[in-house]
Amino acid sequence: MHLALWYILLFSCLTVPTSAWAQRDCRSVGVESFDRRGSDAAMQDFEKAYERAQCQTSSIMKLNYALTMVEHVQTAGKQILLCKAAELFIDAQEDLSLPKNLSKIATDKATEHIEKCREVSAKMTEEEFQKESKRAIELARIRQREQAILSWRALIRIRNDRIEPHRALCRLLKNTNRHQEAKQRCAAWRFLVNQQGADVDPLSEDYPLWPFFTVSGGLIVAAGLTYTLASVAHTDLLGANRRAVEAADAGDLSRFNQAAKEQRNLTKKMENLQLSTWVLLGSGVVLSGIGTYLWLDKRSVELAFTGTGLEWKVQW
Image (cartoon, rainbow, N blue to C red):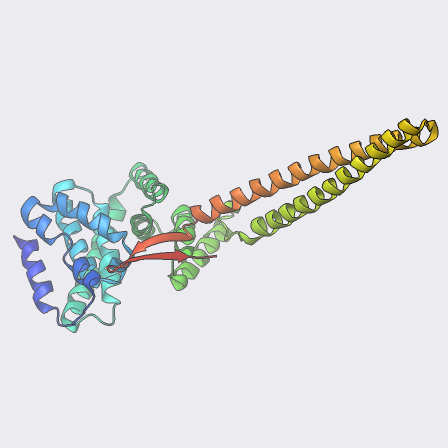
């Protein structure tokens, strides 16, 4: 089979040694499943592997994934795969560690499929474009971030003048270590917004999360202070109760009335402080919850498998 020959060529030309099990594992993704069960099975393996952090640096896997996409177009009929393949070929050719012969393959294939993507762009209807856009949004929603990024890149190549793909890619890339590309995509998005006079969705900006946690912390600290004041008021109330009892036992009406008035004032003060404590504490917890949700929603916390263990990735 034609694609299988490409696999043999790619693996036989690989001359760069590596001791990383994860990299070897990434390079072999999809090969066996393609030979045994065809492009459908291989595509499923590639889609899963493409989300793994250690496979993001495997240009061999990207080349094999792109070649499988090209083959899959013939069976699935999804022309957008040609544009996705072009993006993968471009990524692979930019890898300076790739051997020259493989880099040439990637470059030639990138040029070929960029041209094919232009043909896809010319034929794609607005309905088809919107369908693919919804698919990309769904991929991001179900946490398949890398697949979503690849889809938006392809859609930008198809319709470079559309705001939504640039906006979506700007947001997604900000939560990765691809800062340069994120900067470029965000600049392109803002340029289109200014050019077309479109309204900007405030949530699409790079909103900072520290105010949520700062204000939340302040409210929780304030809740602690009001609780302390309420405790002091409670202690004073116990003292007023004791003085009222002593005045009653002594038959001193003036002292009793004074102590009773003090009791009423302290009770009201303590109740107000207790209410303030709960309001401040509740507000702090709610803000902290919102900040935590947005933090996680931006994919600022990830658990990645490195090939030899698990690794937490945290971005503030």
